[in-house]
Image (cartoon, rainbow, N blue to C red; front, side, top):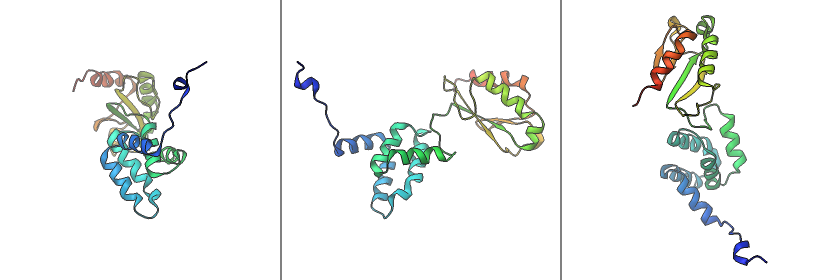
Length: 180
């Protein structure tokens, strides 16, 4: 026979859930949610709340989305639905170095697709992903405004023009060796 204490499961109460959610989110987000709750249709503030969470953490993690759902009294499925619907939201942490490759007409015509393939091969990731070491994230963009330098790659704001696939290893190595 099992002892009662070993078989007892503690049930969460709202106060415990609320306290956990408040500890999970930064104070300014909790305050914003509490203000929204005092207004009509607080659920209309969901996108703004998710933006605040992402600004703080750099992405929307499951724990943070669950906390938002609890405090806003919105189903978790709706919160994650909004987060996955809008491309602005990231569900995984970004790398230390954000690589953006221009896929606009000028860059595409000058070989951006070959540069993309080399980046994917070197990094072992696809668009929207981050390397396992957390160093690089990769995304495509429509135009970086440097058409005369096509094809263009931007890493944390630093622009590389006339990039060819054979230049990619040296560019990546430069960032892999940075210690700042």
